Image 1 (cartoon, rainbow, N blue to C red):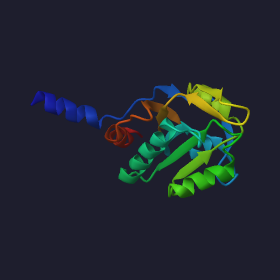
Image 2: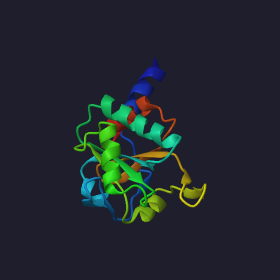
Image 3: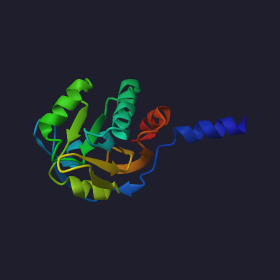
Length: 177
C-alpha cells in the first residue's frame, strides 16, 4: 500500500527542468514566417523533434510518435515542433507539403528550417553527419531525439525519438507546467 501511495504522489509531482535554453534561434516555419525559438512559444509547452524529410528510417517514426502523442493528449497549451537539419532540401514549402500529407494541424504544429538551425541543434546536442551517396544524393546520420520543454522555455526531458514510450510522454506532459 505504501508503494502505491508513493507512486501516486511521485506521478503527481511536476517535472523539474534539466537544462535552460540559452539561445534565441531564428528559423523559418512552413509558411516562410520568421520564428524566434523558443521565445515565440513562451507560455506554451513544446514537444520538439529533429528530422529531415528525405530520411528513410528513423525520422518517419519520430514524426509518427509525435502525431500519436498529439492525438492522445488533451493538453491545449502545447505546440509540436519539427526542426529540419537539411535546409538545402527542406525549404518551407517542402515542410508545408510534408505536414499536409500527414494531416498536421498547423495551429498546433510548427515545422522549422533554415536560419540558425545549427545553433539550435548545438543547444540540444543533436549530431547530424551528411553521408554522400553520389554528387546529388545524400543521407544524414543523426541523433534520434524528442524533447519536452515547459511553458517557461526550459527543457524538462529528452527521449529517444524513434522508440519513445508514448504513454510516458503523455504523463510527462501532464506533469509539466
